[in-house]
Image (cartoon, rainbow, N blue to C red; front, side, top):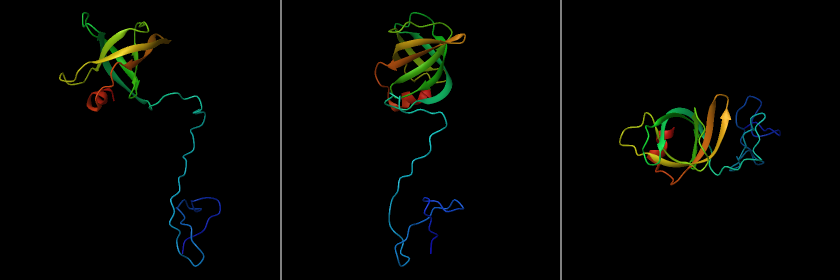
Length: 144
């Protein structure tokens, strides 16, 4: 026979408690338990359609026409829709660029991005950009 617990699905020792019908038969049920939010985390203002993955990786950015030497950047985070990159100099919103992970194999294509905004963060600049065309999954994985 299982312990009953009126305060929730866990017993005093942290084990999952199975509800029972009168007569000791377990109840077949499925319950969804929401995980508690992290302290200070607000979700009511979130506008992103896809979650961001935060993992800093070295990247290379280049002008869309490949006329200049690629520059070093850092991938701050990425989602299915775009990237946030950290660079030494500001980038004008609306600028079209190409990006790829610095450690990506040479066969991995450059990805076209459009700069949406650029903001100072100390002595560097963070710019948010969206993919011009959503890259394939294997290309997206080069960004972490």
